Length: 104
Image 1 (tube, rainbow, N blue to C red):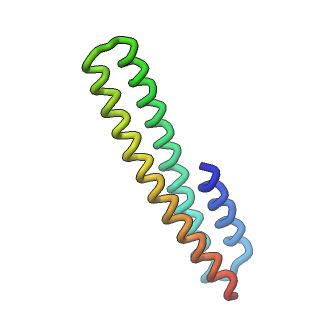
Image 2: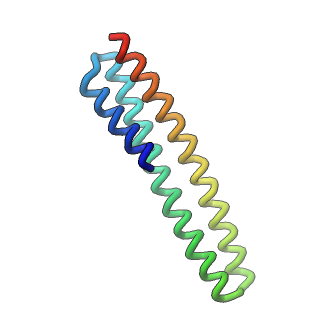
Image 3: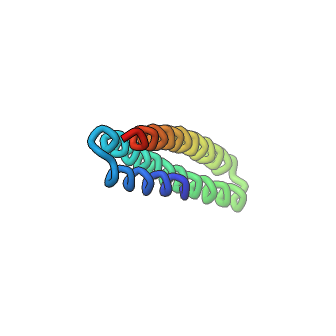
C-alpha cells in the first residue's frame, strides 16, 4: 500500500512539473496508481472478511463455515493478485512518465 501511495505522489509531482505530453503520461500514471490503491483496499477488506470467516469456522467447527472461509480466502487471494497486477501497471506507467519528463 505504501508503494502505491508513493507511486501516486510521484505521479502527481510529475504532473505538476512536466510539460503537456509528459503531463498526460503522468496523469495516466496517477490514474493507474489510484486504481491500484482502490484494488489494494478492496483486497485488504476481502482478507479481513476471510479472517473473520476463518475465525467463525474455527469457533463453530461447522463444515459449511469452513467452506465459506475457504471461499473467502480464495476471493481475497484473487483480489490481492489483481491489486498486484494494477500496482505493476502503475509502476510501469510512472517509470515511463519519468523517462519522458527527463527528456524535456
